[in-house]
Length: 204
Image (tube, rainbow, N blue to C red):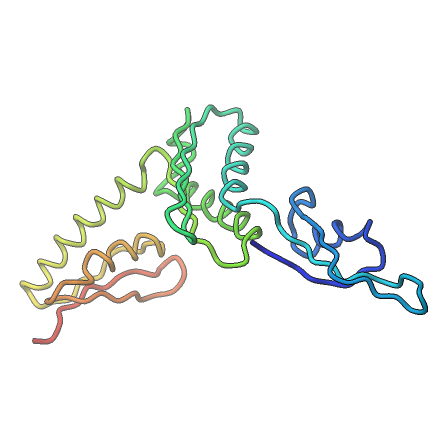
């Protein structure tokens, strides 16, 4: 839960000020007066605390619903809070391929947008996962098969293998899949959109 403490002369302006500073809707902000400062008995200013009174996960759900409503798309959204720092949204719409995009690029942009919105309402960085039509789950299985197949070849030939460029989420899947392997190791190389994984044989 995000909080902000500040001084202000008028309580009527407190919620607007907090909304601007926190960059969130003022309707979800609760204002508590901590101290009233005065000089010679005349009220001068207030020390107040602004509290974000909403669950970040609910903001993500609401934002996704509004997004699809504005696009006039029928959608079902399943939200899961896996732990205190990870929230996932599984979505099915009447236009899954359109929202996933080529190589999942549109889906990646939707996730980036929701992640930024949700984290405005939290005082710690939250992991936000968005999947549409089971695309990421299927993609994960494909990447794990690729990782296993390539790792076996590297272990057999003792020759490192360079995989094609992937985003951070996809690279992490392969890192995790091969983290316990005794014969190979993984390392990310390259910059930006060219960043990729290299699977290397371990020294014996």
